[in-house]
Image (cartoon, rainbow, N blue to C red):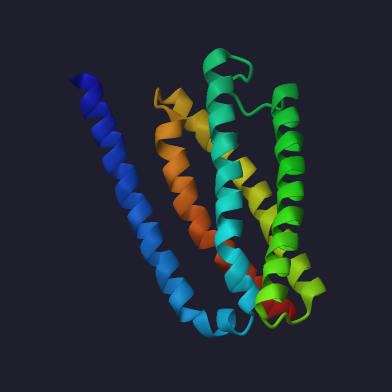
Length: 183
């Protein structure tokens, strides 16, 4: 029964935080729908980009938590060989995935007749957005995992749902900011 109470308490906090972030995300997207409609290829790619960076961050959270529990990463702010290997492995996976998504997305866009405005710039902004988010999330998840682990909490229970909601907000936010700056 104590385990049930612990899971319920942790889940309730996470659901409330995720819901609040979701409200901000939806509001932000609705406020910028004109900009998004002017770049239909972004509308085509945005869900898969959100999924991609969310999936990579979920994998990272799981790996960090596993490393902390089995002791291959100490619960300290310290660089380790395992952490560096995870970083580069996930970074390579991310770059290959972005490359594949943009090829598939642009192919679908061309076949379906979607107007593609300045494809090189849009692809560059997509790559920059996802790479910046990966760097930010790597640091955030590393620090948060250690903090939660030291408090005796399971980082997976907190970080995976919050990260997904946070990235659903941050991905379009950063992409729209970069579009406004460079276009």
